[in-house]
Amino acid sequence: MPLLEDPFSTDFMQRALLGGSLVAVICGAVGTWVVIRGMAFLGEAIGHGMLPGVAVATLVGAPVLVGGAASAVVMSATIGALHRRGRLSYDTAIGLLFVGMLSLGVIIVSHSGSFATDATVMLFGDVLALRDGDLALLALAAVATLVVTAVFHRAFVAAAFDPRVARTLGLRPGLAQAVLVGLVTVAVVASYQAVGSLLVVGLLLAPAVAAGQWTTRIPTTMALAALVGVLAVLTGLLVSWHAGTAAGSSIAYTAVVLAALSAVVRRLTPGPRRPAPAH
Image 1 (tube, rainbow, N blue to C red):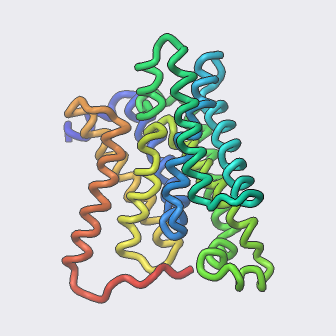
Image 2: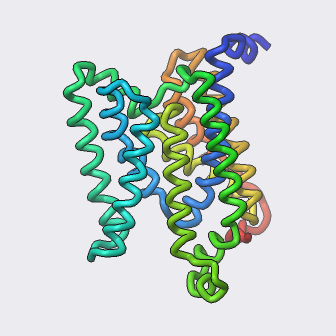
């Protein structure tokens, strides 16, 4: 079919599809826990927390992912420190750093001489510019994410549903929370090139929400979320190619549409409502 074959006959579209699919796998695994734990605001905040590091890396000619990762790690650590040692609630600490880091990033970029272009790439990504090295990093991030989620699965489940039981079982819910925040950071950084800091939450949340309508077990939700994410990447790239729209935005919007369609179809489907996810 020319509709499908023509776009993916080019190398850059093939790399975009492969890279976007790897991002979908990462976000499917991490996004499931983001939805279960109600951590959407954290994901969005870390996405914007990358901006100062990306801006500095752009100005000095360093790899933007290195700068973004460093900035995101600093923000994650600072959120945890403010919450543990101060009187701020978790969401208040996130909100303050969210505004501060976003503002700092825009201030730094505004001195670069190419503010509009740089800001557009930072906020909306450029999945069509993925290179072989980027794909290798995404593959490594995907493998690491799957391994960590498998190793900490029991601790995540216990910490999510009953932290006291987790402590009794020696599963260290505090460590589980820190690891989960680290996974969210990895997912946001890995997704940056594909959809940018503004749209990354769409890939984190929408596929997991869509999958959660149909599954009762967390591993199954992760797998289905990854598949929904891959479908969003494929459809978004096709829309971008044929309609001339921005690729990253098309992918993120498609993911949200799929989540909405999943909810509608599930509501119209007879049968018992889906119970809460089980481990």
